Amino acid sequence: MSLRVYVVLLCLVALPCVLFLDYVLPRHDVVRIVNTEVKRVDPKNRSAGDQREPGADVYYIYAEDIETKKPHVYRNEDTGWGFPFYFKFNSADVQAIASSIASEKGVARITKYGWRLNVFSMFPNATSVRRWDPADAVIPWFNIVFFTLLGAVALYIAIRIRRRRSA
Image 1 (tube, helix red, strand yellow):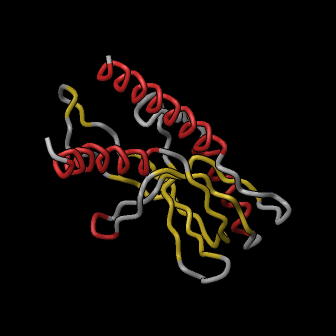
Image 2: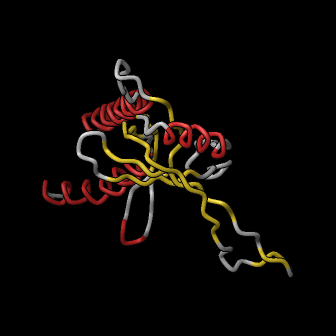
């Protein structure tokens, strides 16, 4: 096969992987929290026998960028045991911290995953909220370790493939 075919195949495989990782891996925002809210979400018309699932409360955190004042909205929902595996069961506690910071119009570091898609009213999910100290540095340790291990595995596979072809 030609080089162009390899490049196209690599792009077809790599693009979905990159998008998937961009969605599920944690990212950090340093923002000023301006408000919090709890909204009741109606059930999705799924029935369990004769009973309908009850609605659920969804927490929202409203913030703005410190420098540009650009608005940011985060949902704050438990992930539970489901995917992505953040095992988050403390959304009420996270909301309490966010509300406390919002009452002071304070600055916080929000750890999140997901995308903000206006067309679908989709918001990133806040997994943690912490008061921000300007002396703190945001270093994405999980992502650094994850991509280092991923690169090591990819290098190992590439070396194995190259050895098999040369043998």
